[in-house]
Image 1 (spheres, one colour):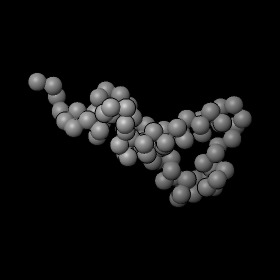
Image 2: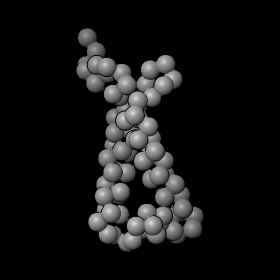
Image 3: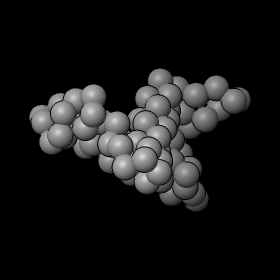
Length: 79
């Protein structure tokens, strides 16, 4: 991220990661699956949301190592 500002992709990924964290927190403390409660248990919509959250988590891990679309060329190896 550049200058404290984040691109649209970073904001979407951050929101999905936050949703996943909140969902896991609710499940761990109250045994409530927020996604399943809102969208139904293992419906197509809930599977899509779980998939998007999983991809967002993977992308967030990659971005922790400096591979972020906000930084042009950040995914290229350093010379």
